[in-house]
Length: 201
Image (tube, rainbow, N blue to C red; front, side):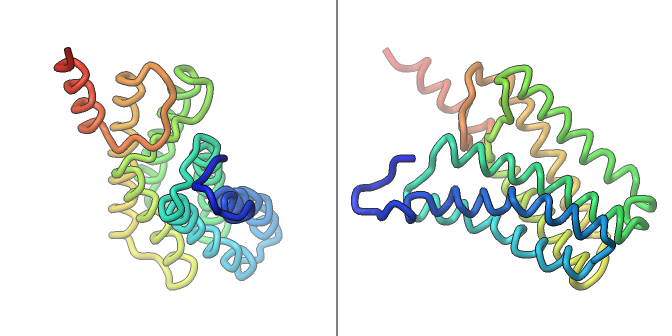
């Protein structure tokens, strides 16, 4: 991944290292869940959730955005989503049983977008739209608060609604963009870009 001149090698790879650490956390989370160790699960989960914010901030602050970084971030997000759900199912099963419709709707919406992306591009979309970023933060807050402080239904409602909205927008983007692109801000900006291209001589 190329970066501005003067960055040391490890600094240039810092965002990808953080994303890779989040990917590496997934098997640890599964291990602690299978062992019934909620404390261990929580101690790994919280830094993994925070890393989702850190890698993006580092990439933007150091101007080190790249296709590889976007892909690693998407893989890390997907693994963290499903290991978090697995942890909730193991340690807080009542959340899933009592709010099945909300949980299943979120998972089905994500799987639908991922499936269409694989058919369209052969990989995860990695759009990282503004809506999907907000959804990721809300999901992270919900899961972190659940394991540290307890269950708050309104956080679940906000996280799921925003996540589904983000997936619907990404399905539209999959239709609009014939080739894989990372870090697309949203449908509005893609349409605006298209109008600009049409207006060009």
